[in-house]
Length: 314
Image (cartoon, rainbow, N blue to C red; front, side, top):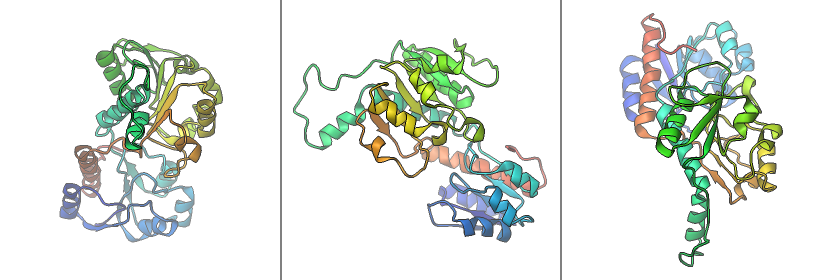
């Protein structure tokens, strides 16, 4: 079977894929262009896409009878794939849950601590050569220990963040989720706006139409003036304009972002703010994690080729 891998992946993953399939690896690191999306469906039996490869309804409308039978997505998030349109065209979809959990939770903690302790601002000060030495009121930030964490979303990643914050920093945890569940630690389910009123708010919900702009101006207005807002989910879960307005007006103390509404574009208004920590979507950027994600995607490909149920169907 012919396999198309849309981006370079760790060597171990490519070796595993090549051992099983007639594999073509696209060397470009940018998302597939419109023509490439359509060619992937017509020229290959299997496709291993990732974030930004927009297999939307329009692509499937143009290729109603694709040769490809599986999109084995590299990543747990799959809002760049119209799953209903894929299924209607006879194309299965899989993803890579679990492998990303701890790495993404770690990035959430990185953003919490960097923003609360003004670490990015301090590094920029030092790199500019403007640091004049220690003094008692320099770059005073906030403790996170003992504060309240408001989690928006309590899936695998949300639970991992909650464990780190509660057991590591003694934080109280409140959370908002669509489905009742037991997070396995002392935590209280609350409505969305009540979770937004916490000292530190972290967004950890899936992307997609159901959560687009879930965090809007009204939700942000509920945060306290000392509040810190962190997004490690998908950029369009947050109304970016409303967040910028809240930060510029000083209605919240700061934000830590790993994702953006129009990646890779990051608004100049965000980049100009000193009280914002900005990371280039590093959530799963560890070799062990990306390798595990790739091997999970390959496992889905092999299962499909052998006629077995997909380990991780969407």
